[in-house]
Length: 405
Image (spheres, rainbow, N blue to C red):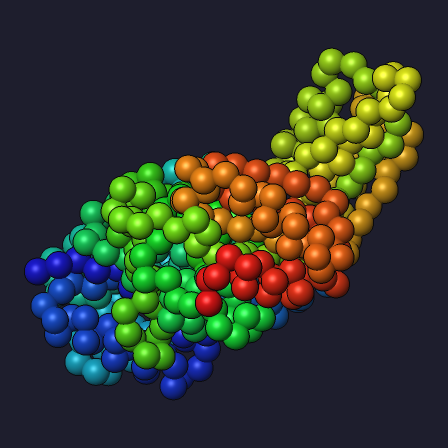
């Protein structure tokens, strides 16, 4: 008898019809002789509604209360799924994050899991009862308040639960039937990838592919959790995450990703001296703001520099606040921002052993008269910041050039 964790995203539980369909998939897995643990997101659109409600009180923003509000959707989902399963004659019980408990640090809205007390989950399994766990939720032990793990946090909840109970597999059910070589809405001949390495998927997730939350991939890689992404509509086999050594033929480029959630900040006319970067990034780190690409440019006098870094648009307001609050310490003259940017990335294990990929990428973009603002590379990816208006043209051209269709 196997042990399978099934995670259902918002689009997979967005209405009663979808919930009933999800319960049929749960029942089918159980009929195959496996024990099942379910993790669920809020119904599609619910969390966005809660965020908008909370924003009405932005002047008296309290992180603990914000998490209380935005985490409410998962409670509804797990209750409805449990009711549906019991109505089908399958014993099930809903569990909220604090009831297990899933213990996190104290970073509300960006909480990281410290540990999962798995006894309550294993007890229900032993009693032939399906635990239906609220994703996205955890508890801060320091103040006994609900915490949330950021958008897409239910993926991380599912993988963490799978790791803690040593599940045989973690199935992530969503509205797509796997991971594609690019966004099928932009590239019509994008191809589904049957197997992808953890390393490649980590780059895909961090660079704009919204199939899995980045932290869930990190956790799957760290604890060697077998993860499969598949459609809750078809239920057909999707994309499986595996170790690099299990990928026999390492494609030069596995896929093209993009993100329109990018912006950058440029600090003008700083003193060119040791420690300046630390003065910039220390307050950003304390505010839990992730920075991506970084560029430092010098002047002819070699006395002053400009410093540019990219970040998510959602963090721009907070980052600007941190920079202005520390203006005297950092010593910049003025700030320039650019909100109309997109990040385009090519990812592939084969890039480790082949040269010329960057040259080809840059040549293709040049042929389309697309200007590159910033470049960032790693062993298996190359990312560029370009004007947002050129996103679709760049993605299609690169997908064709690297023969991914």
